[in-house]
Image 1 (cartoon, rainbow, N blue to C red):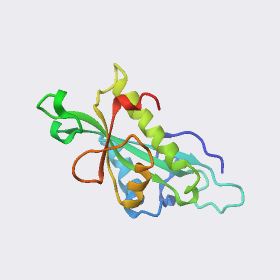
Image 2: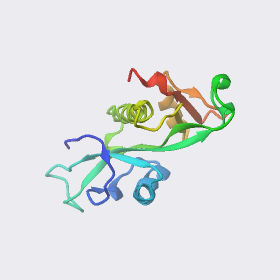
Image 3: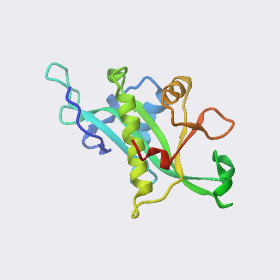
Image 4: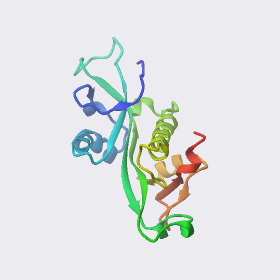
Amino acid sequence: MPITEFVPLDPKAVNVKSFDCGKEPINAYLRRYAAKNMALNLNRTFVLPYALDANTPRENSEKSHVAAYYTLAHQTLIREELPDPSRLPRYPVPVILLAQLGIDQRFHRQGLGAKTLAHALRYAYQIASNPKGIPAMGVVLDVLDQDALAFYHSFDFFLPLTDNPMKLFVPIASLESL
């Protein structure tokens, strides 16, 4: 199953219905909402497509399948929500929301979660640090469950965003070395 590179979601080119990460909210988002939200210019979803090998029955042979995906969007936060608000203005500040991240079960425990997260954070950094991009103070994650929280905590750069342990933050400046 050769895996290519992350590309913007094109539902005409990939079979999103075959994606199953084992978490229904993550599956449902890709299958039902990702393309619609992109069409409305609300966010961007990127997929890592792969082709089935010759021995696997194909339900949609012309389409690739999704090994992993992530969705980025913009959001604003009030300064008191951020870990170090002292230098910030009193109005909401921009951040990038890592809204979704999922790995198909066929690729669990193969390092693809870390690769997908790294790609998402690098892209967020490019968006925020590019003079022609959209500035952002950092990346925010709303963590789905305890399994996802353990995954994100395995990386040392996430900070708690609020008193809610399921909201994490990483400053844009700390992503430069990724």
